[in-house]
Every structure is written in structure tokens, then in C-alpha cells.
Image (cartoon, rainbow, N blue to C red):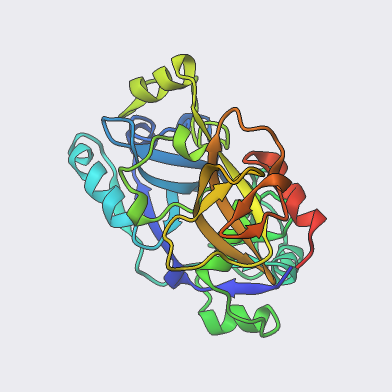
Length: 316
């Protein structure tokens, strides 16, 4: 895969600090904040009272702070939703705009920065790493077949790129493609309030804890999990080329030409394209019978952790 860095203008980071920070977040987020050890990370989301996702993020617990890392533009919506609860807790919440920045690293440059880390400052697969010479920063290694990481650092973008041996700057679309290969929906501000966690496969990708106590929207999310039966599934398909861009949601047809689903979005993967598709939950795993805008689907897999196999089967 290509090696690239995306700068801090791609991300928002909201930091929650103070005596009651854990208790405040535990009552609002879908993940179990109380079980998140110091210097570890997890996926998480925040819902409204109708069980719709307001924001999705990587939650990092580092020392006395909780950092919620998300796509640029989502943070103001999250802050607006949580602000009304803040006066009841002894903690602060702020959108980061100081000397520290969040960078996305992919490919060989991610491996090089990881190799430079002096040690792990946690334990297990969700532990943070300590980059050499960056005593206040951290490296969040993201699981998957393709190397990628989030680096919270005071280093300017020029220094980061130099450290990564002048690797090219990447795009948000490239970064989101890596997320799709890990089974993650690329949540943006346009998605806020539109989907339940189950719609985005968040109930299976580690964003939701079904053993924790109450949080906003929890009753609806839990009811859908235990009593609901999904009629649709999300799948990642590999296309030889991108569908026509004049069609917002290209349809998918089967071998008989019958429309069976839609493509929600596409992202580049080398010379090919990943397509996030919505299909009936009972659709058989015969992805090679599908066609999108006249072109045959190259391959596909269910939208879960096995999606990373796609990157090993087809090298860009």
C-alpha cells in the first residue's frame, strides 16, 4: 500500500479533563469508559435520545485526559450535544487548537514511527506507544492488515513529514479507505443524527458496550440489539473503477439485472476502488454476480473484521 501522512486539518480532537471526566463520559458514550485503562484506546460513539449517532471517534485515555479523535467537522456537533450535561460535573471539555496536533500515518512511514517508539505506555493490543523524543505525545496503533496509526504530537507538520522521510501527503479519502478495510464506516458531520449504531455496524466493530450502564439513547440501541432483526447489511466491494459520479448512490444489480442494493460511497484503493454497499441481510455471499453501473464487482466480503482479507487478495 502507499505510504502517506495526513495532517491535523483532517481531524478534530475534543479533550475532556477533570475529576469527573470518566463519570461524565460514561453517562454519554456507547463505549465503556470506566473499563478503559490509562494509556489505552477504544472506538466509541455518542447518540441522541432517539438512538441516532451524533459522533463516532477513537477515544484515548492518556494520563488525566480523555481525547476523542474524529473527522474534522464532527466535534462542534458533539460538543453541542454534551454541553448541556457539563455543568453537573467537575470537568472541562474543549476542542483542541493548541500546540498539539493529530496526524494520520499509513504504510511504511507508520511502521518507521512505531519502530522509533521507545516503549509501550500500556499493555495489550489497545495500548498507546511513546514516540522517541515526544514525552507528552502518544501513538495509537490501529489494528488491521495495513499499517496505520494516529500520532498526537507537538511536532509541526514539516517535522513529521521529515521524520517520515519526506513521504507524500495523503488525502482524507485514502485514510477513509484504510478504515473501510478495517470494517469502519467513515463517519462525517453529514451523517450526524441520521443512523443508529446498528446501521453503521458499530454494534459489531467495538463502538458499543452492551454490558455497561445507561447512556443517552441506550434503551433504543439495546432494544434493537436484542430484539431487532436487521433487514439490511453493509458490505465492502472492490471495483475496477469508480462508478459515475453523477449518480449519488449507484445501484447494484444481480446476474438477472434486478436491483438488489445501493452503493453508499466509494474510496480509492490504488488503481481500484472500494465501495461501501447496502444489501439485503439475506443476500448470499455471491458478490461476483453483482454489477455496479455496468461494471462487474471484482470481489467482496461481509462488513466485519474479515474485510481486511481484501487487502491481501488485491494489492494496489
